[in-house]
Length: 139
Ligand code: FES
Image (cartoon, rainbow, N blue to C red; front, side):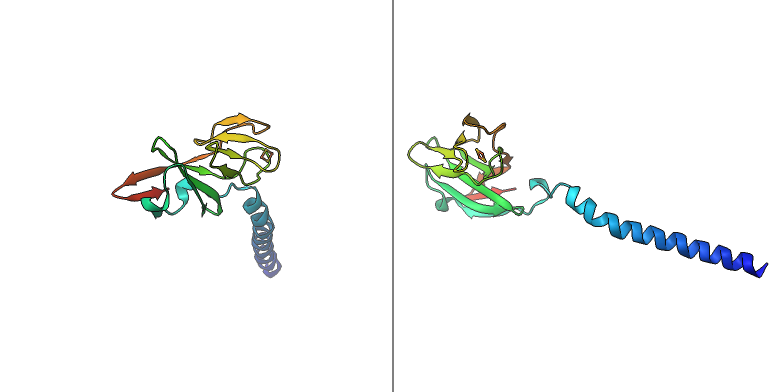
């Protein structure tokens, strides 16, 4: 009788320890596989409109990744991920041609992130942006 109680108690302890050990082992794998929090979960960033003249780009960090704001010559403001969709290099703004060039394999994107040429399989990811009262709000 007393041994049954001990067996039950030890069984419960062993089951609990197994659950804790499994969770501890699985957590790093889950963190590795889970996607990083996207722009929707990131904080909003605010820039003064004066920081971004027409035809210029401003690089910054957003949600732990490289991002870029562009004010096109037509006055449109665009926020994009600056991470190339090919193999993840950081794109560069080419003011003369008003487009992005990836230094790794010469991928080219328009100012709104559309693929112009090269190996990138898809456009640069857009980030929500709004402009009001002299401020650019990203996120
Ligand atoms: S990483 Fe950008 S073109 Fe290859």
